[in-house]
Image (cartoon, rainbow, N blue to C red; front, side):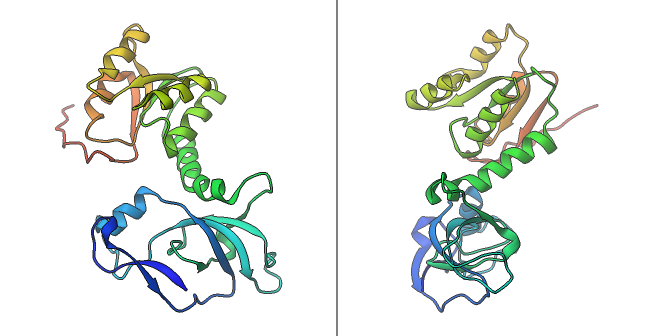
Length: 247
């Protein structure tokens, strides 16, 4: 079986295609697509404690059941997707516990399924378990045309919020407009925070979802309305600098 293995921490240059023994497990999945997430990058770079080498990256994917025990509820050929609780989806085949599998409807491609679960579940958790938003609150989402950001803005609109989203291209801005989200450009020196405050008549927003980190953190704070909430769930541009707080 061919699989990607990391033998030294680092960037994508450390991803090696190796020949490995077939996986051991009663329920096997032939991998069609593997999801690529920031957690994979951080693991490969050695940012997370406890990650051991050699590492087989990938915690999300989709494919078809290759083998399943009797009574498992799965049959050979079933279309499935999975995320979390497993490791090693950058491979031809993977053993996946039955409780981590979801059935992929015929209307959804395996490609889309592999990209949906981790991002979608993250967005769902942020909206329902972390953020404190009242109906109608204005909200800002950074990287709003990205994986988690794209889920967030669509759910926010479905829930009746006024949604703003930062993007870095005309194409992404057009996509946001098409779903009723107000785009803000944060590339090429654009002052997205000033533009947001102008559009909200100085009130700001009640919630900010920030996966960018250092590059947007100060602006995210400045964009908050009184008693607003800033939710940090990533640091694509690096970790924000520590801040001293006073009562």
